[in-house]
Structure formats: structure tokens, C-alpha cells
Length: 113
Image 1: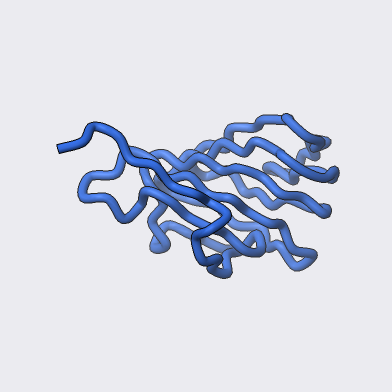
Image 2: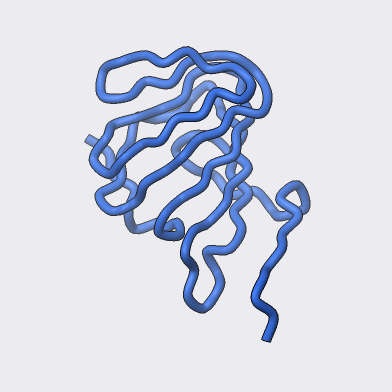
């Protein structure tokens, strides 16, 4: 059994998410430790939070800001932000980012006020 897994994020089909469109890798593994997502932020990104998941965003293209619990963090390429469970958040701007989710993404853990 191989002790590694690889994914080509730009070849994974995108799925709608509160942020826009996400291409998700590794959540489908038998015992995933994390998932990696390529996310394109849309103008209609919704404020949401997770009760169990921690997300780490790494901006790879564009500029904008991240709304986190009422604060605004400026975003540009290579800005990195960790968002802990319970933190209300949404990204704003024409952005593409990598999102590392621990534990692996679970669509049942997306919450809206």
C-alpha cells in the first residue's frame, strides 16, 4: 500500500460552496486527515462557519479581504489565514485560494446564521 496520495486540483470537478466554487481533494479517502481545496471566490460569497473544521486559506491570485468575526484582513497573493471552529467568515474580492481543512471537509459542518 502506498503511503502517499496525489491530486491535480485543476482537473477535479468544481462544486458550489458558500465561497463560490471549490475543487476538493482527499476528503474521499478511507481515513482522511485533511482535505485540500482550490477555491474561486464569487461575488455572492456567504458568511458561514464550521463547528468542527479548521481552515487555512492561502491566497494564490487576486486581492480583496477576509471578513472574520467582524474584522477585515486584507488579502493578496501568499496571505495565509487560519480560521478556527466557530469563526464567522467570508472572503470578498476576485480571489483564488488554496484551503486546507482539518479534519477533512464535511459538508454537514457548514452553518449559517
